[in-house]
Image (cartoon, rainbow, N blue to C red; front, top):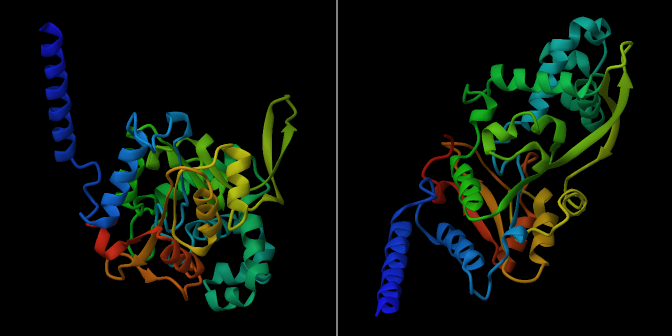
Length: 327
């Protein structure tokens, strides 16, 4: 009899707990609908003991692009905005920049002249802004910039232009035993100083593009790492599966991106066995954020959108699926 009572109590507890969980909403900024439900259903399937799709905790790897997936990326990638501001801040130490392109264009605010310099000019600016200093000095510069710089349209710090629904998704996945990683084409040294505070993702769980660093000793024997101009690894497009393999060592079961630069990461995730979730954020809200996809020079979503449609990957319609955009 005691065993029966215990069994009944356990069943009642399970029903009550399940009901309470159903009534709570771990994704309150997501509108109810197929996209939100697909996320909840996937998490339930891979975390339920005895489920045919159950995935052990150590294999619950979720990867997210950053630009355009976790935070805004218009009108230019935010790291480029940081680089432009760094050039202005460093100009006093480089008087030759006043008459040398593409630096002169940045200092004069002449974006037309800067655009004429093409990718070569952009690389020069980014290289100058990201090298020739120690990693500690660079990290300090990034933190100062994220504290003081403001977005030209929203007049808010760039780190406040993260997507509230994605913050909730990150927390929801972690609450269900997932380990969340950023896998971004952005610079790893640019992201690491602030991502833990903003996303709850520690710096060691950030995979990004990187330049080489070199150990140096000062006169007193104190070591530091100097950022050099040489590019070491580009974590974009086909580089993303390579970065995942190199730095994470496990194939993800959950992946979110927003552009063609994320296509190979989603393909790599989909190619694994068992339950898989592949998602894309589609920017459809010009009023609250921006609307762009196939023709955009920033965050172009074309081939990845076609493949998502063909293979049944989930496409988040920002305007329809999200109640709010920014925190």
